[in-house]
Length: 492
Image (cartoon, rainbow, N blue to C red; front, side, top):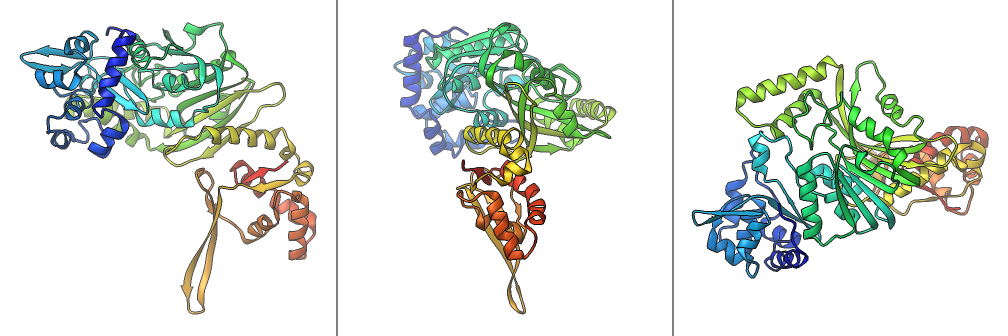
């Protein structure tokens, strides 16, 4: 690809935006921004939705769907940018009176991101396929803290998505990938989006930035657990979860004091091994506190089936052979489940570091950076602050999180409506939703941000006519869970 000049980039952005090739414009047209896939077989529907010949339809067919169009239609949709200029950039080719796409372009917010057409992955011949915006990309982006920082490193940048989002809040950004083709796309996209504060480097993991430290590190890693390194974007080339573990172990040397590293990872549940112990061992001796959101887990056979279906080409016989090899790899290593999650690790000064895992819904549906900061602060409170000891926790003042919601579930009985259970949830932070015992709900009624926890416990003990020490002993584990879950916050 040829890097566009500033004037070429500005002109191309302008014509795409003016013709509705934006988030809002394409969603209004298509219902959602979709790429055609073999799995969904959705191309006929997408072509029918874009049959008018209008510039927006032509651009969608070229850059989203990867479908050739008549040369004159492409020329009209791109005007006043010459078709020859777009071809010289490596985005289109011409021949036999038609313009054909050589790369896809995906709008995301104010960004335009070029990457490989889905057909290149479907062909299955190239290990250096550069992916666009995937579900894991969006999860990683939503998880990232967006406060101003001096320096940010994006590991495994691919087309540059995480790096370019980071460029909005980081003074300088380094985007690293071991795939030369990915670095080429990232450099192209940095120029296309006029982001001079992004530097794109080729190399494995931290090798290109050796000796530097960063305020923030992000990474949607090649985390897939499988038998072969067929694709650079997907396969780390290590045994099981070795690639993710290696990045976690190496990252602290590249973090400034107090710096934050946020990664998308997977890890196996091995027969006879506590998966939490396996995961926590990644962080032993790193000098980092770690908070892990476990997004979900999968059966090994379904996991292998999904990746073969999504990323492998060929006929039924090839698919069966690849699936069998994948299944045998996982079964031979005692893998019972495979978990997906997001990691936030912070280089912390001295003292004992903490590690905490929380369950979560399958995906992050909205930006959660501020939630990450809250989660890390609550971890500090529980492990280093007043929450670390019973006496200091009882002396602390706590408040109910403003997002907390309590709902009651009732069932009809011959005597009228009967309460089945009370559930506690957290709006916008669906982290611990579950049944709330009556006495714990009564304790929450006494927690108002002014009383100490000990005073609230004493009021509950009076109501129950029980010794305060006994009530405190019974309540403190649940109170710590509510703090860890973000339902209770330190008010001091």
